[in-house]
Image 1 (tube, chains in turn brown, blue):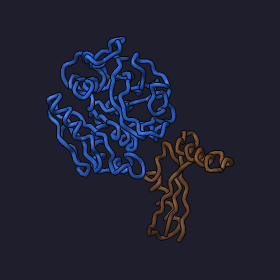
Image 2 (cartoon, chains in turn green, purple):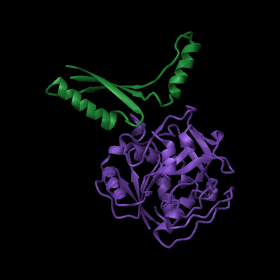
Image 3 (cartoon, chains in turn purple, orange):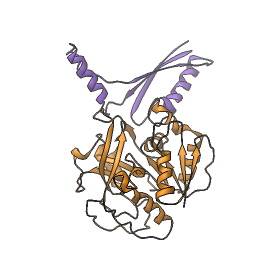
Image 4 (cartoon, helix red, strand yellow):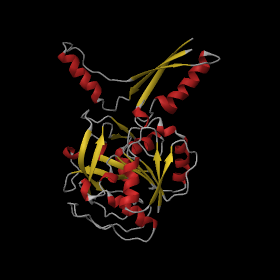
Length: 80
Length: 252
């Protein structure tokens, strides 16, 4: 199974990288891009007995390593 | 005294810490490789700066799970003094031994220059002999030094903010903050006060030839806290007058 994990900064955390990207987009001719937040995308290929078990394990992986729970949030999608 | 200096793949300020302890302070120190499950007996542990694991995933995230960090956790819960410097600060936060996290500098630049920090907060082995309010000039070199946490004022109220960026006169002002850290926080300690970490590099400010000796006071304070107590005199390069004298040896 493959898990697609999306890690993003919590809303309350300032994201200067996102702001820099938004400014660049504006300069490139995309002024309609109002806000940009830059996160992380991680793919994990794993063996699991079921999608539910995979979800539990991925959740634990995120909390322990893939995301810093002080400053980040995560969500994931599991494909068999 | 005997100091254990951790070493992770990608650490590069471990030798600087070793130099400061052995050649400048003329004390004993040894390296501890990250795979070691046990710490040899020592009076303090230094988690040095650098780019452990190439800052992969997040700075300090992977190093925080090294076997040696379990040993450091045990050592710290028994009250052992631990000093994290720069990447060491990041590692200690990722390991849950200190509150908060270090994120990308607000300027998006790698900030590499001298800064002023003022010493505050509850007494710790590394600061108890430094009078509260003293200003130290120490270099920084980091891209991910912005300190954030859930409740920075509460951290201050509990005396866990140990260093804050300031101007030469000790004023904590925005212009003196090199990375956008909440409340100008440059370093914190845990609730017990034995685990301390800061983004600036005191080990790089121990000799006049390197531009200043203010960093030496953290190591002198450690030495004094382990033995007899007396205040650490200001080094010749310190520019700011100190305020009230903290009682040396007090631990809350």
